[in-house]
Length: 222
Ligand code: 2AM
Image (cartoon, rainbow, N blue to C red; front, side, top):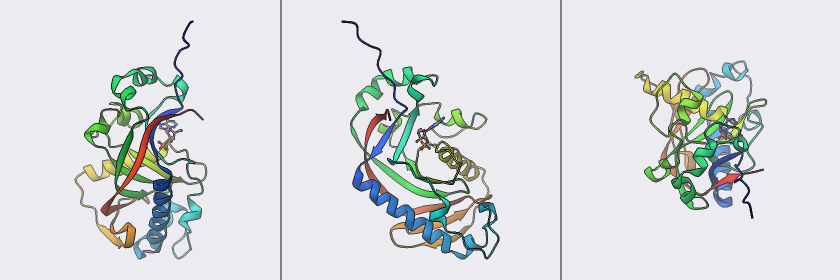
C-alpha cells in the first residue's frame, strides 16, 4: 500500500497539563490584578488608551486567551510555512514527540497588546527549538537562542497570539540595550517579585520563585 504523506500540524509546541494550565491562568489573573493596582502603573495608563485617574480593568482588557496554554516551538500552518517539513523530520523532534517536559517560567509580562509568560528553555528543550525562531519575527536583531520562548496568556481585542513573542523580544532587546531599568514596584504572594517598566506600556515581573509547569510536546491539528 502507498503511504500517505505525513500530516503537518498548525503548530508544534509544549502543551500544559490541565492542572498546570488552571494554576497558570489563576497566577496570570493575580499578576494583572496586582499590576493594575500599583501606583506606578496607574500613572502610566496612556499606552493602554486610558487617561490618568481612569479605571482600567486589565482582566477585561486582555479579552482573549488561548484554549490550551502552550509554548509554541514551530508554527507550520499545516505545512504552508517554509521549513516546517524539515522541522518535523528532525530526529530530535520525532524523539521528543509526546514526551513530558517541565517548563520553567522566570517572568510574566504585559504590554498594551499581550500578556505572557517568559519560558527559560533547558539545553534539552533547545534541541527542538528552531534556530531561526527569533530571526523569523525580528530579522534585524540578534538574540540568544530561545529568547522568544513564551506562553501566551491573553491578548487585547484584535491582537493575534503571534504578537506575544514579538513583544517579549522587544522587552529582551531593551534589556540588552545596556540602559538601566528602574524597578517600579513589588508584587506579593504567588507572584512575588520586582516589576520593571520599560517604555510604551511594557511591564515585566521578575518572579522571585520560578514557576514550573508540566507539559507534553506535541502538534496541534485543530
Ligand atoms: P503564540 O505562540 O504566541 O501563542 C497558532 O496561531 C499558534 O501558533 C499560536 O499559539 C501562535 O502564537 C503561534 N504562532 C507562532 N508563530 C506564528 C505565526 N507566524 N503566525 C501565526 N501564529 C503563530
